[in-house]
Image 1 (cartoon, helix red, strand yellow):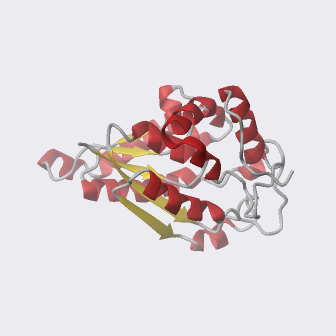
Image 2: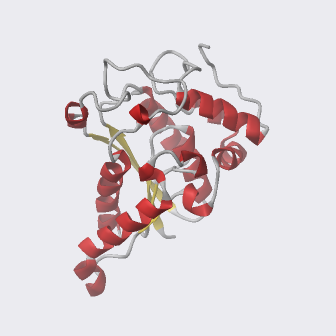
Length: 224
């Protein structure tokens, strides 16, 4: 079976994207600790890597990015308040480019043919989630390994996302729920790391709305 590397945050999008790909690929998961407030997502990622039977799961510490990002965004800043609806302060500068660069480097060494991340059609406000961005990055990465590809030592990679397939967050939830059942409520979407999901940040609100649209009763525990 072909191999795929999945950027695997432990959130509902990445877990459901992995569920979607599970029957078609041997999956290798990679999670990043980049100084985010929501460090509970790493705990969730480790748990779901086992549930989905990932061939390998690596947690890569790139915590130095927190200092580089500083107060440029609310997800790594200790000073800025997280909004309840989309605001550009949520956007971590080219975060997905950083993640996909490392994931693609691993993919080339594994001779994987796919690098996946969980961006979906509801992520249109995020430039590094859009298919056009992923297509250009894919072209650049393959060009960076073109001699290895032409010699047969490397394989071309495709950077894939649910967004590319026209899948929404609710579409993904239905797939994830079918495969994982009620354990899907243990994914971590919140931008904070309390005992429960805060229930008021933009990501929690998106999660709630997706469950409503998917017609799956949301059993996630929220503080609000």
